[in-house]
Length: 308
Image 1: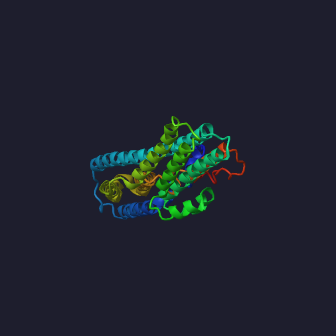
Image 2: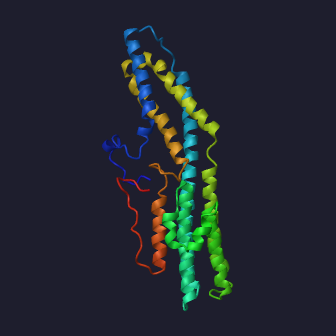
Image 3: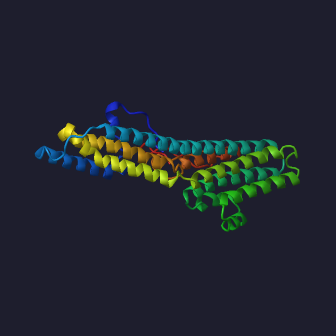
């Protein structure tokens, strides 16, 4: 995710990191070259392209802008919903850790082990959910927080975060059976585990339900068609300036399309995706501090205005 202060108006035109210029540069270059070719032909052969009214182009441009705006809003809604879900995960992870330390008796060895067990499982859940959404390997991040028996069973699981939630539920049951926590407080602790399961399900829903492909195809086809016919429609009135207008329009339309494509997959590693690594690390540090530990990893900071 890009993290930077708003630049001044001059620097704004030269910022590459975090923009979609590089992604859409081939399309911009093609439309610009097409506009230049049409403008040169019109310059040397003035009667080659007759003067057309711009009304059809204007109407098509308005319609395409509405489609792109709607798709951009839909993509941003997915991105913002994903961010809210991870915010809720941080809240419930901290709350479960706080209540574990507050409500589970710590005046005996079993109580302290229960604190550590629940909090370690919560840290592991945060890591594994991130890795599941990014389709990466979680073992390096979680093996230090789990027992060997846990790791063996988790390697056989098709849904590691859900398996960890089951382990958390079993640990709460052990605390209840050993009278380490009041029977009346168990539902309060279990509620946070349930909420974490809801966050996981919401993230899986976002990841598994993309914007309909037919809608994306319609928008992209219309954008290419519009930018292809644009130089032929404006060359008679704009002359040699045609390539400039073509480049601006192509950057706008293809840029919106590329940005929407990034935002609709908020859990990836693109420049504008969510900083899941940083959020997971923050939760890890907070929960280790709850246990009173001092040996924890450093927070993840932004590098070159980007944080992952």
